[in-house]
Each structure stands twice: as structure tokens, then as C-alpha cells.
Image (tube, rainbow, N blue to C red; front, side, top):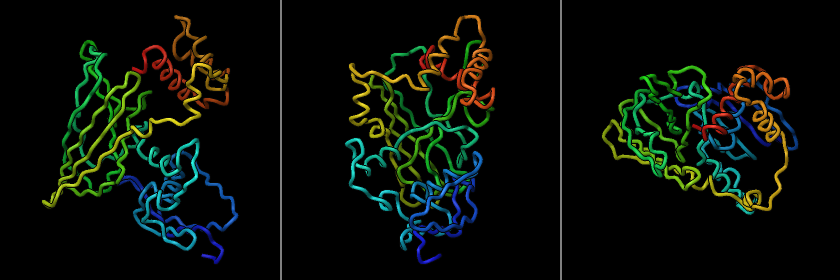
Length: 307
């Protein structure tokens, strides 16, 4: 490390559960440098950034910023800031982002325990305002539990079944990801009790989740709770965009949705709609599969309310 290095990484290894993504990463960044991180999808760019800024705990290695080791610190301790953005303190924004649920691909999940049933939802009851349940499982693979991966298994008319879980191929449906505010280190034989609850506010669901770990060694239980309530709170500019007097801009996203709606004529198949969209927006979808996946997903939201 040179005397002017602002950031140094040595032997950095990180990943998710048993899946290693970074293998002995070494680099220096000096003050005033602008560095670009390039690579194909799945090569570890996002994992590198998450590890450096404290969003993911490294498995091995050293990160030094301004002469201070930071590889064992949380993001809010690495770069606290009192300066607000959109009227919200940066530390609060970080907390909201860390608690936000997201969508992940089934193949990206690295389960440490076998799948277990959470609850059964009757779609014939659309007025259901709360969904909750408890699942229990035993850890099979030692590692760090960073969150919960949730998917659905549906039983359709005639006995047909469909799932968005790891056992299926690529679909337009993803899995839900519920991050733990504090990762749990687990070993084989640990028992986990998982509680998930979703309450509707009339427009969307607010989630709360909890994982209770009972060590195989017989020690005291450990609990971690999370909620996406803070992540759903909006700032002043977003509130303004929802006001009745707000005039929305006709941006690229609106143009794409307008084109999609114009192509739905009751006769054209999904593949034909997707191909027409690709011709109109050639740089938006590099492959037919991507265009078809987007078309199917957006039509499900527009026509079926996201079902």
C-alpha cells in the first residue's frame, strides 16, 4: 500500500452462505482517483461494493480506509453523515435500504436449510387484510444467514401445480428476499423458527419477519427481527409526485408501457407483442427472452393486478 492510498483491500473473500463470490481480491485506490469496476453479470461487482461499504460481512481479508480497518464495521459506522437528502438523514436512508424487501432469482438463492412451508393463501379470499404464519426447519449447511428467500407453490385448476422456487426453471416470477438487519452465523443442527407477517394498508402489504435460532449446542436462543415499514416511508419529493396537481413526465418507462398497451388487441400473442416492442425499442431488450419476460410481467401487473 502506497502512502497516498485512500482505500486498500487485501485478500478479500466474500459471498452468500456457502457460495463464494470474491476470491482473494487485492487493490489500492488513491485519493482523487476515479475507478471503474467492470465485468459480466454474476462476476461479483455488486458483491465487491457491498463488502467494501459494510453491507456484506467479508469472510476473509482486510479493508482499510484512510488508515483505519473497516472490514468488521457496519455501513453506518464506516460513513456516518448528518447531511439530509430529500429531507431525510442519510443514516436513516441507509437503514431504510437495508430493511427493504426485494426480488431475487431462484437460482441465486443458496439455502442453508431445507425448504419449509410458511402458510397457505386462499386466492378465493381477495379481501384478506393480513397473512401470517410460522415455519420451522433445521440447518443442514453451516454458513451465514443473511436473509429469507420466499417463493410460492400454486395449485391450479385440474390439479396442475406451479412454483417460482429453486426447483423450477427461469420464469417471469421471482422469489421474495427479506434481509436480516444482523446476519446470523449458523451451524448444522441449529433449529430455526421463522415468522412472517404481512398486513395490508389497502394498497400494498407491509411485512415483518423474525428468525429465532436455537443452537444445536443447547445454548441460549438468538432472535433477529426485520420490517420494511421504514423502507416504504417516502420523502417530500416523492409525496409531491403523488399529489393531484403533479404533471407526470412522459419518460422512457411511460413510453414502453404505452406501446405495450397499444399492442394488446385481443389477437396478438405474447411473443408477437414482445417482438414488436423489441423492434420499437431495439436497445431496451437485447434478447427475445428478456423482451418476453418483461412483457409477461408487465401485462400481469396491468391486467391481473400483479397476480
